[in-house]
Length: 105
Image (cartoon, rainbow, N blue to C red; front, side, top):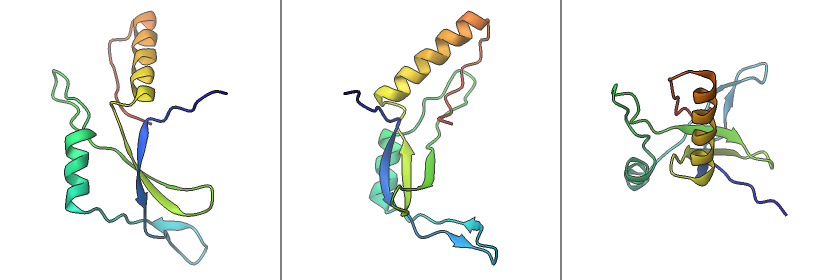
């Protein structure tokens, strides 16, 4: 049995998306407590490179399989994120590109 590796951590449920008259999603909200924000700053901030790029926290709003609005935070220290970075580095070395991009999407 293969184990799924995720590059994000579930933060929790978000507010239900707001829609327009046509039923299209127009806005989504997520409420975070001060201790949750501190935890994100302590654990999930991306590293800064020599050019000063980085230092970001990436949140993703999505619908769960059972239709609930959810929020997750990208974990740059997760095994999946580390594997993805290694693959990107190998690909950039083989293609001759020097730019490494830490974006999770």
